[in-house]
Amino acid sequence: MPRRMTITRITVTHYAWEIPDLGFEEGLGFDAIYQPGSRYPAGGSILTVETDAGVKSEAPGSIPERAARYLLGRNPLERGRTNAPPRGC
Image (cartoon, rainbow, N blue to C red):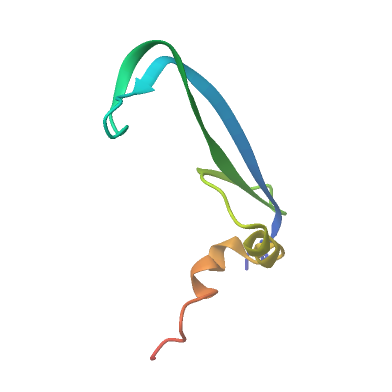
């Protein structure tokens, strides 16, 4: 029988960059347009989950600190069972 795997580390890496010559139209400000000299700030986050078995998973996004603390020490393969109602309900 395979041993139980547990989450040992959860990290969020934030990154940022600027897009040169990109701005927004002056009307409602929804449409991106070529605008010489302007710079548009962009960025995102990468969520990394590591286990004691050496398995590492990465996905775009983030996680609240409270949720990360809750998941530490849990089996990542049972993530769907954490909030699911018991079978037969």
